[in-house]
Image (cartoon, rainbow, N blue to C red; front, side, top):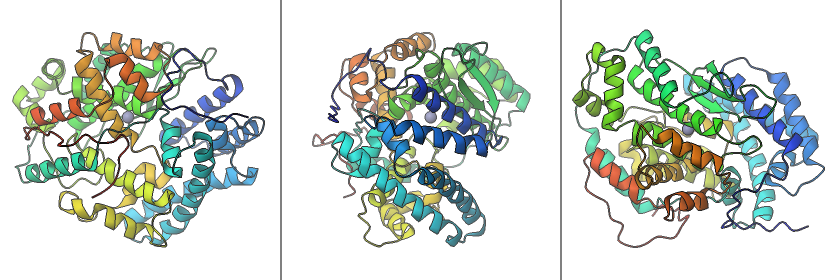
Length: 460
Ligand SMILES: [Zn+2]
């Protein structure tokens, strides 16, 4: 059997080989995950789905999804889910009590399983390391143009900005917030009648795909965050970006990996979200009445706050958070830590950036890390690059954004970097993100002195 995989290949138009039942099982998994987020907790259904995926994987292993879900014996498939659940619960407990011990054991055995799956995928993709293979699994055709020197330059800019005064903004009542969300759904042409189901969740999210015969296969979870309703609007707008992309996917196709999914969502959240026309939209539809004006919105959107543990902070610091969490995963999965416990590994990784993170910043604050979704986090930095490259080179505005997303969704591209190249006419580059950052956050323009290799990912 030929397992050879060519990462440069552009497979536009090629339908997934494992479509039919396997694809439906994966769609079912996405719907179930969303129900977990909505606290509907269908544990039994999730366990059943895990076993179905494992079973289907036994018949043909020549597909990365089949390797991912089919690794090991059937009891391992169940155990993996239980470990993930224990790790998630342990992390929540550790966060509350400060006692790491409740989390460490399930986390470490979960990591052992991830390593084995990474090794299986490594053979399939012919990658140099298990971590690289997991990354490729989550984003086929992966590339990340951020180098360590970009990250250090961003971290320095974050440090310079954190001393500035905090901007106090007026409250936004839920009724106003929800009216704006309704208008956002209209702007993004979200089809709530056929393709997309709205759900109420604790943290906004979007999962699932349109599938023939399945009503509202895309699940869009939105929420009102009473602590920070302004940030809440942008977070929801990000998820609406995902839903817009996913609802236009032809049935039977998937996004061009997590990195492309995030490219579209970050394009909504920042390239469009920070634009003058979008600020005017927010003001007109309720924020002016709450006491906002354009200058206040701009100031609030560019605040760089040190005391946030969530890794989704602001577009200046976020890539640094993503970098440290990804590097942490890479060290664990590639077993570079030689006996060092996870907390010591994390302490080493954040050492050069310690001044910009809160004092009690920890690795289990990342939902992906504590749930064992390794190899996925780095795709968010690739997504930052993709978002601004598409936004800038395809001249995306509030008026044409849906048409742009439609073109990309319907192209049936499966490979991230080739798809970006195809749609923007240029290879994936960090240039457009860096330009936007230096303009928006008023930091010195950053010009890398030496060209860097793709996928370079080391801390100097
Ligand atoms: Zn996202």
